[in-house]
Length: 234
Image (cartoon, rainbow, N blue to C red):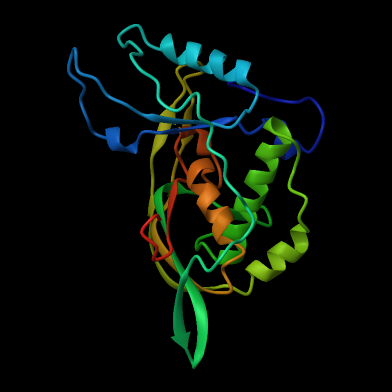
């Protein structure tokens, strides 16, 4: 469950995406005193209820020095709709034409790839494609099947959305495996990107990505993003 793999299929999916992500950046640099409580978020994507019970049991035993005292949300799964509804984004006037605008903040180091290479800037076509692929893969492995959209047409439409402002920088960080002793890079870019164009179709995917993360090594906290559309709920 925590190290899923498959013997056959594409080489890139031999080490399957895990059905969870941790969210604990608010603990960076913090020292927890004896007897003090702390929390972290744990997003679980496998909809088979017994597997969630197993995951909770594992978390309850993961450290002798800590005790799991409470759990929130396990009995109320969140459902996200990927279809468009209404006009969910800011509209601005550019050259006498109304266009949509959103801001994406990459909260933790994010690593996106296109054509097998790591990209330096989060162009929207690449970002949308990686969000689409991650959601579809999680659905295929842990829900009722992959997305049924036309992937190529989705990607072509996303290419028309422009990256109009990019304020990002690279962060180098790593983790050491307690099992193997190996050091693994967890670097990537953080910061904000602003996009303009026909975005209404893609906003539900970006909202879902706030839960799933995007890019490489999301299970360990990379690829966390926040979406700003100008509406109070974002």
